[in-house]
Length: 356
Image (tube, rainbow, N blue to C red; front, top):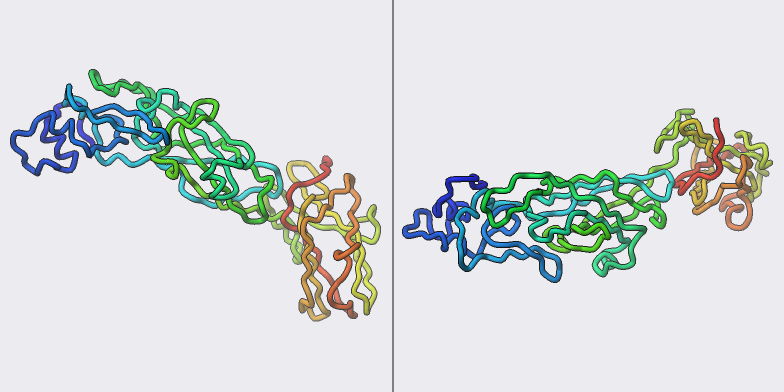
């Protein structure tokens, strides 16, 4: 448990240290406990001074003279090692180039400003591989530097560590930028590095160690919203609904059927996708996936064809032709009573927007 802020004795300090001098020591001196070499460097209060090494880890210098028993006031031998956020899954989209995320870290009781008085910010850097994170290059998107959350305190009078600010034990940032441009969809990984810094993002103090600041974020792009075969609106990402519209003519994409010739395996039609959000009619997603599901007259799937990175953004309300090259050929010939379902998913971003 944490020692009190007054009435400290060498025996109480010995007990808090884990009784290295025995459960009931005799002739225990102030120098014995203050100079004991195994103390928790992450306790906010304690004997000795704090600094950083070349790797920016906390260094605890144990006193070798001028021992002060009062430096054990409020010492906590069980103070937790500072740590970054644990791994988690982050949803984003549909579409967009970035997402604001919330990150929680655990600086615990470490006396940040005693170790480095300039470490008043926390920096988050994102990478697309563990190797890039270790070498700190190349950076994915931009790093985010936010003011660290400190609370002003009245330091213990006469204590060697007399800092008047203490870091929040649980630090929460609600405005960290996760760049989604360049991520594989729908799933990918972002490897984040967290550390204390100055306003310029220069590393000044690690969270325990360099690797102690490492977090792996599993990213998942939410599917674009749609209307299913039963007419039910399935909403995603704040959109009230989304549906695909097809026709033989680009300017008439209103959901009409496209005629297919029996005995052929080629198709050509115009397609657009529409999503509605906050009074805006969004037309033509870019870098989306179009899925064609070919059924027979008994509702059995004959084949499924997936077209990736399709750009449906024509810059207007018109549809985009889905026909040429590999887009325009099915593996099975069209039979009487066959029908095809057209789905648009994995939208990277929406194109033209119109007021509803």
